[in-house]
Image (cartoon, rainbow, N blue to C red; front, side, top):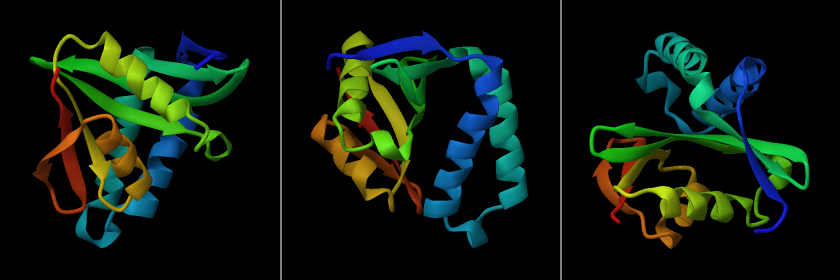
Length: 144
């Protein structure tokens, strides 16, 4: 997709990424079934610790989201992938996913909330298959 650029996230992005992650948890997780405060604290610590591994996504110069891919043993994990609401359903997610898959020389896996039907549909479109059902989430994987 033309007009996309990618740059390393900076410490000032921590709060925005955290907000996007928390919104996902609040919208798709069964809050009553998890230790919510502990999960939120863990998410905050992870983002702070790993901010240099996040990538900013720009479309025509405008920041439109973030993602993080990291090597976990012999697979890549697409750990966080967020687009701001106004940039969804424009092909940006597909372009970013295609980029991540193309750059991977090992299988790619991810966690996705089952109730996030748009994301599940997108991942299936790119050949990800459900590897494990964790109740409110799937682990999906794409073999290379």
